[in-house]
Image (cartoon, rainbow, N blue to C red):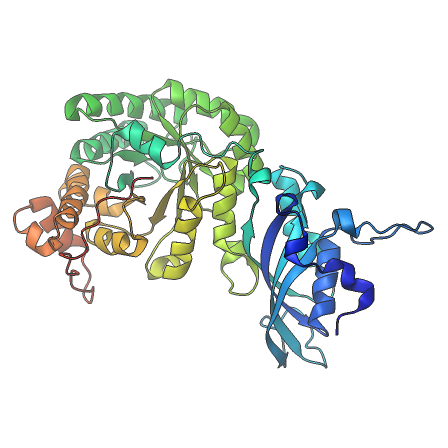
Length: 451
């Protein structure tokens, strides 16, 4: 039964100005009445106490978050999903709730947004010890205050002159410990073999044994040589993850030396730091995903990864590297597809970001990844699959391009490999016993999909 005293935290969505609210989808588990728990949840993340003592005024109409939909998924459970609270006598209810939260409470500021929707009021609401933010939706009026990606999918394609196919990245391996000279030679070879982008690993930033200044100078020069030899644009992606007050300087050093894109570990740096860099940078910004799994891995607690993807796009990332398909990444296929959609789906004036689902990829995983994504608008990012190839990184990159040629022509990779040595060697080196046989591709030729 809905408590009349708390009814101000409920609303019919049709009566609200859609431009004035962001919409939030949560899962929660509560003890007691779910309606009352949801009302408390809204109060805690918005107005808290909603009346001033001694005054006849109610702040909820202006500042209150409102429940606009509530579904009880299960009732009478004996305990919470996680052992973080004493089981209540009356049982546990599992619920999904949709909340309209007035964005005027925090404005177009990512730290303030997160403080409201993922802060104390959300994860410390009385009687709701289990909470997960499942999704977030922004009205165009809110999005208008953000720049989003400078280049986006189409801009990346234009820079690389790469259309109607995935963008081919490669993580230079070994990922850490190499001196700049050896590192740059590996990148150079991979570009000659057909990579679009050779990248620093997310763990290799400005280190004493491979300082960014020297590394970027050598890779910048190698990139230009590779462009001259191949006749097509290439990209060196330099990792500038660091303390926020160093990022602009590191960006300027790397770009002046020939890096034409920069990598930032989004959550360790902080999205506000990324947004600051977006205002300064004139090259594409590429996100990596450290520090996201600790928030998202549990099914019923934390924050869904697609929320982080949307926030990274909002902050200005042109490319978003994310956990990809396969058992190693501990991410379901549906969750990966949700994150791909969060990069590419319409988002008001914000350009699409290129999704890069990654993890233990090689030429043989390109076709299943392409099939699962459903278009060519993605980046493919092998590491060992290129740099651990028996023919070296040039052969590894060639094997990936040969795998794509097979896909584009509706031929399975084993048939194609008979006449292509690099692909044949990749299959010999990287295919594991028990891997599925190559899919029949004659009816799966989908080489379009530019955004």
